[in-house]
Figure (cartoon, rainbow over the protein chains, first blue to last red):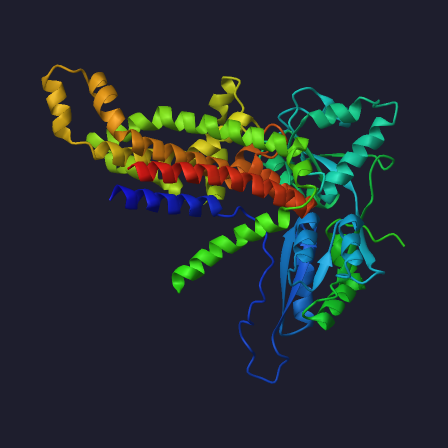
Length: 279
Length: 248
């Protein structure tokens, strides 16, 4: 009896240990929900992998695209661009990939998963965010170097994490902040999150004292206090978009990419705080 | 046929893992600062969680096995819950309770204690999910002891402590040890609660499972090597468990 119970406990233990965390999985092609009775186009699903910072804007664009293309459902997989790139490399069946940097798009070009000559559809800037109550009383960028400050950044492998560290390095080269600024601020980092939205959550809830995310993320969470980063230190994040060469719905994928770059798509991006792509 | 399918489901991915990771750079990755830091942190925190579970859980298991008291059913339920609770839920719950702005956050701050983003938070998260395995196993062990032996000892003049130390603990020892192994394995594998409650920082809170997840996003090779390391440690524990069962 004891042996059976112990074995059972072991199975439960293994199962519990194997329970995945909130890992974004590539959505499987869901069969269409309802086919209209009239002679309407067959229901199809378009799968779009998009950077976490595009959650709000692409949500709107998805709805607009569905309205303009009856029978089409757009399914999104929002995560850090590095997660999405890895999933695509490992064979995830996506139609479109929108990344927050070129660094996660270029390897896909090399592996012939994306055609060369992709285009940017938007740019973004970064900003420092603070909890609504600002518990650490951060008033300036200099305060980020305060000892004991709990700063949350994205992991260096995340586009925003890379951009943030570039900004800190730039500031260190300026005599106003000095060479010790970047290392001191980085020593205040208490956690490297997997995407910008996780940083927003930790700062918004007050668990962290400060974070660095995109300007658009701050707009999407208006409760947050912000400290703008001057243009000479800021980094312009370039967002490329491309259909995948192995896309199951190649025509829809191309149409979606075109829509994002169209006047309607660009209006939505602007509404969410993005800037147009640099020519 | 179904048994073959299950064995295949479990065995093949593990074989593939070892197969794909084996190459010249394997030991270079294993000995890298990041891997060693994650391994050291995993072993340290899991050891501490199990020690904590043992110290606090063994008396609790004894109580649950032999005493009746008001609220015992509720107590049983609470102790068993983390076994079936998704780890992410555990992480959020811990944050809501012990986060800086959590229900008990203010009280903790008054003592100068801030848990999130610290190594103790990792230990706490692991104890939360793993201690129930130890308590359940130990409880079964204690319950299996013949009460007549305890009565006989008491009649001969033994104190409660002596009864515990010389009769209960040795007889229930194997069950407790099994519980230790189960709890240790669960602590080592803990991911969701750790990521949400403690955070992810190399050297402080990035245990092996977290390093595997982050590594996968940079270079799947790193994740492969770290996974094999964790697999090796798990196999050692499994062998231990098998040995204990055989001695039973």
